[in-house]
Length: 360
Image (cartoon, rainbow, N blue to C red; front, side):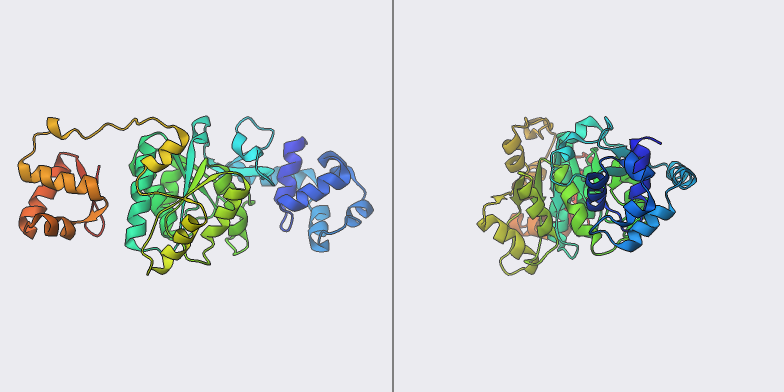
């Protein structure tokens, strides 16, 4: 048994999380001392539930640890502790960093350049498109997108990063061997192939309400800054913002319709000092990240005047609904559909669900 084995053992026990591990380490001085301690000493540890201590005593055997480690291996999960070279350096600097991370996929050193994109599960189509667009553009600069793989903004952000050919990290409020929500099974698979799905919770941990606020400190901890796309006044998203501020991270916010409930939280953040964001450059300039994306130079594109007009409207107002383009340029639906199709074939623009148009 080594220090990592002791951590894996402790972390596997229901009721013994990061805070309890800290208490045990303080009380016994080392994990090895805890492993070898008399039962009477373990039962005398203050401020830890007896049920958790009983389970600790029950599982304190090498065979149990061996079987649990075999389970980890069979599910193709990596275990990373704070002494591991693969443990993200940025997490070591936050208050209460997780002692152990479970990982599917792989966190790499380049992921240190990361931005979290978060927001409401019950988002608007506008919010979903904005999260997708910003994530896709950030990915094109080599920036990793971090989120929580929940419905709504989180899922759109992960998908945008993937479609932009970039990397993304999902921090779960359950264990990495459970897909939550189940409808994100394909998304989870793609994240594992192009980034990582991580959690501090042991295998077999179901998503419970108390898990999600805890995991939010990891989302912000992995990131240079946090972009809030949509959030109500009492949204759980704002818990991540609190962690980000505590960790000294930058907070960015998308301004929203003052009459929309999911914009009340973002607008309030701006009033309280968050940086309002209307384009990806607003984020990049904070970190002195140079522009790497290939510009769409209209002078070198073989476009008709009308095609050029449509592209200019999209570039200025993206994401924009197709009907709005037609209204601005006074184009009938048939003509506009043909132009949009041509521009899509030329890989200049992209049509998102709901007839939302963006520059590709």
